Length: 252
Ligand SMILES: *Cc1c(COP(=O)(O)O)cnc(C)c1O
Image (tube, rainbow, N blue to C red; front, top):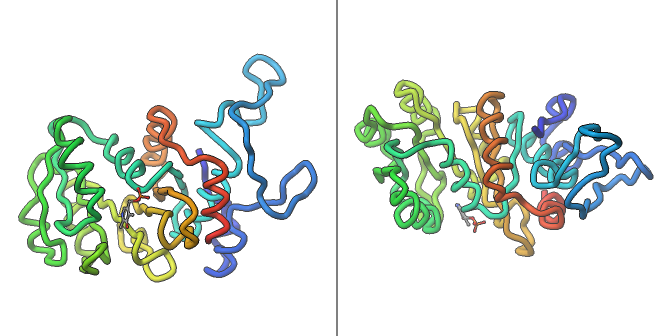
C-alpha cells in the first residue's frame, strides 16, 4: 500500500508539490522519478522480492504520484487510476447492492452517467440534491445511506458545499463523505481537513495541467479504508499506467 513519507508532511505546500513522494532512484541516483515500464519484477527466490511483484499492484512511478498528491491533500494514502471516472467507479466498489448514496445534483456529467446508467443497474441507489443546502443533504439520508458524494466547486456551475457540515451529517449516519476536489485543487481546498473520508480528483484537469493525459486519484487518511481501496485497486485493476503517472507528477 502506498503510504506518504512522513517527513514530506512537515514541509510547506510548494516543497511538497515539487518533492513529496519522490526519492532519488536507487540504481543511479536519478533525481527525477524514472518511468518504470515493467509489468513484473524479478523474484530472488520463491516469494522473495523487493516489495514489488506485479505492476497492477505496485509501480514505483505510480507510487511517486500517489505519495505526492496524498501529501498535497494532507492524506496518508493515494491510489492513482486510469481516469477520474475509473476512480469514482472503484470508490463505489466499497459498497454493495442495496446501499444508498446521497449525491450532489450538479456533479460532473460523467459521474452522473456512471451512477445512473451503470451502477444503479447493480443495485446501488442514488438521491440527487443541491448539496449547497446542508439541510437537503440531511433530509436525503436514509438508514441505507453509506456515502455522501459532493463535488465542490461543481463542474460546470461552480456550486459550493459546506464540507464541515456535510462531514458531520455523513458521520452521524455512519456514512462516508466522498469529495470530488478536481475544480479546487489541493492548493485552494483540502477536504480531509474538514472531515472528508475520501478526496478524489480527475488528474486530467488541473493537477496534470497540460491536457496530455487522462487520470484519477483518490486520497484517504484512514488506514482501514486504505486497505479496502488497495484491495479494490488491485482486484478491479483500473490503475494508472506509469507514463501517465509521470506526466501527472510533472504537472504537480
Ligand atoms: C473531468 C472530471 C471528472 C472525470 O474525470 P476523467 O478523468 O475525465 O475520467 C470527474 N469530476 C470532475 C469534476 C471532472 O471535471
